[in-house]
Image 1 (tube, rainbow, N blue to C red):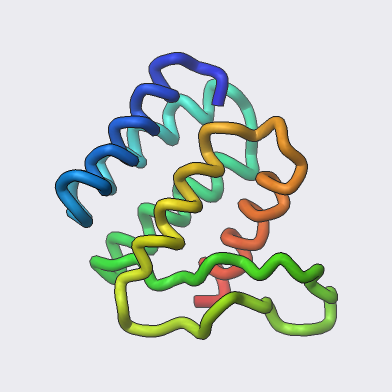
Image 2 (image 1 turned 60 degrees about the vertical axis):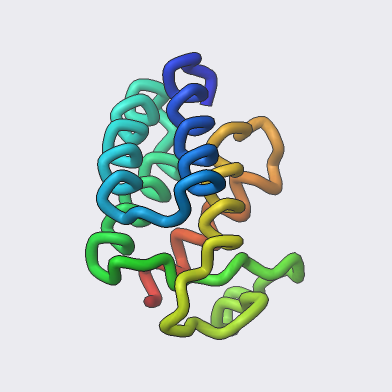
Length: 123
């Protein structure tokens, strides 16, 4: 995201996760605010990823989606991830997803956001 306020919010989210740990309520509120900035930047993949992230957190009170695998995904096969979905909070995956929000200039970041979106919808 290019908006300086959005970058500050992303940094706040990352710092909160590092210092305070996982707090679904604060995270959801911050993500909803971040989504407003993404709407201004008119990036539908990012906006959808943020919405699906906070909806997933609201529904599960945890982040249960694994980091997308680096291997290319065949259209006819199921989504391949580093690990199967579990009932454990996957903070590493959440931290990675949030890091994707800050720099969309890399093609792979957009591709990973699309994989996260598919994983959220399949969850």
